[in-house]
Structures are given as structure tokens and as C-alpha cells.
Length: 80
Image 1 (tube, rainbow, N blue to C red):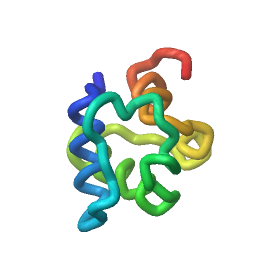
Image 2 (cartoon, rainbow, N blue to C red):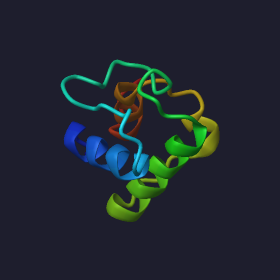
Image 3 (tube, rainbow, N blue to C red):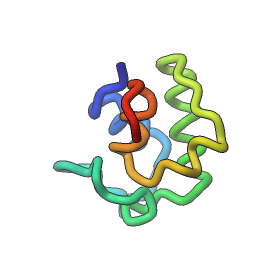
Image 4 (cartoon, one colour):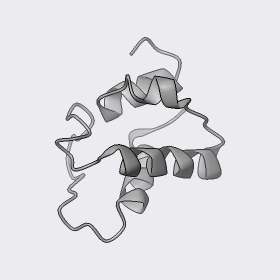
């Protein structure tokens, strides 16, 4: 089960030095693009989740997930 805090940590690690990324509060319903995550940052987030938690998200699925909440629902087996 992927938690909000695990996803937040993966996203922060993937954002690197970008100080415009703000994941305070309830970020899960905000689109990735509004959070400042482009396709490269999102792919890095997925790579981090794979390394840290063994979670594999296929690229074709990833592009259909537009918010962190949708990503967590998909990972946790609930309908996105």
C-alpha cells in the first residue's frame, strides 16, 4: 500500500533542487503539471517508487494518471 507520505517523499526526491515545488498540505488532488512536475519528473518519481518500494507503473498507465491521488489509487488497486 502506497501512502501519501511515501508518495510525497518520492516526489520531493525526484524534484531535486527545484524550490518551486511545494508539496505541503493536501497536494494529492492537484494536477501534476500544476505541482510543477513535467513528464521527466514524473518518470523519475516512478523510478524512485520502484527502487524504494518495488512499485512498477507502466508508462502507458502513468500518462493516464493526472494527479497524485489517481496514482495512489492505481497503485493501491482502487479505480482511478
